[in-house]
Image (cartoon, rainbow, N blue to C red):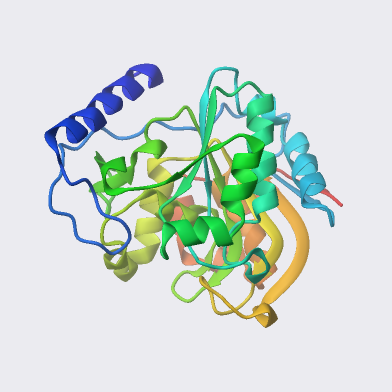
Length: 317
């Protein structure tokens, strides 16, 4: 199915839900009562592979915008990933009611700059959204992401129940599940995680950040968290993963709180291989990619390469 046809089909499904008065699909850890029929599996958002560019780039600079632009340029520049007239959804981590200094959410300055880059490339619309864990309004405001994204020209969406569509993810664990429609009705998906320690999968970076595209009782997935992460990574491989390692939450993740748990690294990573990008970023937490179980499972599933140097790696320091 061509992407434009797919978008029209899913748009109709959402409209049917609104007309029928369906209560929609739930947020984090809430039980749903009414569903619309499941739509088909989402298309792959990745751009064609280009061996002339590395799969992972890393840039270090005290100015986060400079670091982002350097890493982005080294991997091909924004025009490689966004074409004029396309709709772009940016998925930062906005899960928690925390300030930027606490490193629980993506650096808002990076989100704003990514919005500007997409619009400069000719994007028709840029949406910034997430399914938060704490109250959405408080998360988007306190994190600074709403202000920076809107200032840059994005449409910031705080999801409500009717924004979810029941989707067949075709995963081993995740089959039919409520997905926020803005991750279905889009041309490009840019994943913007922050690097954090996590008590269950050891770390939450790019692939784990995709938990924020779904509603429903997400806590149930923690019993098989590695497989659920891989199912999500397979469901919607992003166009680009932009990893925020400007501040890194070393302990007490994923929510954090104490500034003593935060290390300053002033680094941004861009990756077309989401596994390789996560593997490089995990080193900021003292982890080896080959020892992180969901990385290995993702590699075994054909989603990328744990050995980021073998995938193609470049540093701009």
